[in-house]
Image (cartoon, rainbow, N blue to C red):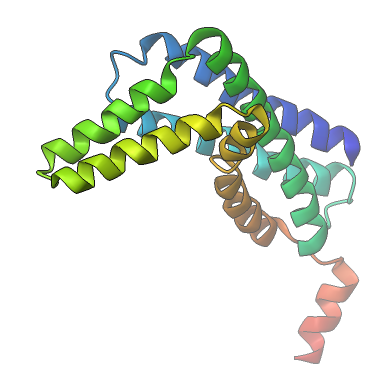
Length: 181
């Protein structure tokens, strides 16, 4: 189980980290909304490896059988490894290539509020919120936690779906269940 989890988790994490590294040089050319769409699309694509990891475990280790609980355990471990790779990649990129990210993000938040015709109080609230986010990002552990919750919920959903789709009861149980009903 460990080999399957590590293999698929690291491949999934490498895909998301690589895509993040590829898009960072173009961050100033891509609008914030497009960056979000591209980022989450990449996260979803990288988490497709959860499905393939569970299937590989079922077919190679479980002799074609796997319970929902075991499938979920395999999938959530792959998701956690992939999400940790995502966090490490972001911290490397942030500290080495984008230390002004929070300033730019704060400016975008304020500009959006102004463009939406927000009141001066609402704009000031956005400025204060941007300052709070920047303070939170100053602590690498808080930043890591905030970054972890970006991909993890996506991986959790894909894990639940994959575990449900890929579960297979042992043949003797399936036959007994069918004859009992």
